[in-house]
Length: 81
Image (tube, rainbow, N blue to C red; front, side, top):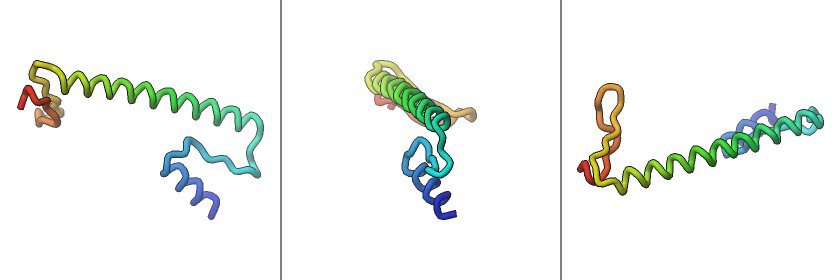
């Protein structure tokens, strides 16, 4: 139970995975590493896309509004303000 609580805490602090030494196998370790690397790649890609979108929104000389389904404005750039 203590190990499970530690695992949950590690994941909450950003760990990609948590493996117990007593149950880890070579295949499990390889799979865990592969998945962690893919998640990291996906996170980096998403971060780059968000950064690009943010730079575009901030620097655009056009009105940019981001609205939700109800039409409420979630975000606007300085040009829109």
